[in-house]
Image 1 (spheres, one colour):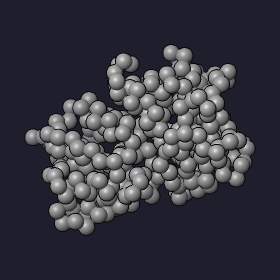
Image 2 (image 1 turned 180 degrees about the horizontal axis):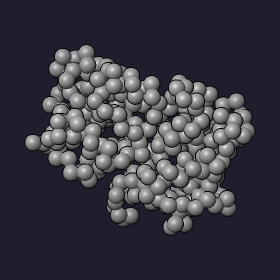
Image 3 (image 1 turned 135 degrees about the vertical axis):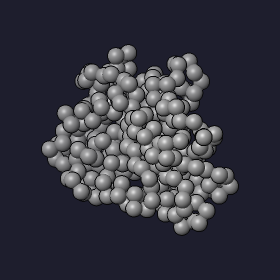
Length: 127
Length: 151
């Protein structure tokens, strides 16, 4: 079983790193889409079937917190798994995102095994 | 916040370079990098006091950073295309680690979006550290506070 991913980060290097780490840890991805902010991510989520969203927090136009909030308010996207990947280690922000329904919060610098574990948890171990 | 000085910045920067880019560095105060002619990324933050971090390297240092974080060979065309953004990403990571060190537990903190290029607000850094990688490429990190405090 493989999953479709959406990587959301305003940094093109950040998106490439996530793609690379997903491949490194052996996550089987049927597709990996990219978006540079929350606005672009929502458009893509409404047009494609995505299993797991990996999102940064601090982005122009729409940040990761608002992205998760809007996903949870959208019936079709409300149950899509969200993993937050950010350099922001603020505890309150982590709690806020988890209370909004993010299933994991992985901090940068990215440790491959942390992302692997988060993806496995989000997919019930079948990614 | 005022007690945070070059040694703290050095520890955070070294950690980020090693963990994010597998770059092993030694502190080298002889490194001379000016904003003009360097690859520069700046990122503002609140801890909750406003501060600014600036990361500088040269063109080849930025290329090495990009190659390492992306796992590419040095002659891969994506290295050149990603080099400036790689410095920006490094600034983002260092800022995240820095906030843990300079803010009190439970404090409200925020990180801005990194920007490429020098930021005039950082003209007089409160502290700065310079390194050279094992390959000889220079990296410099400068931290300033909005009120101009010098540690």
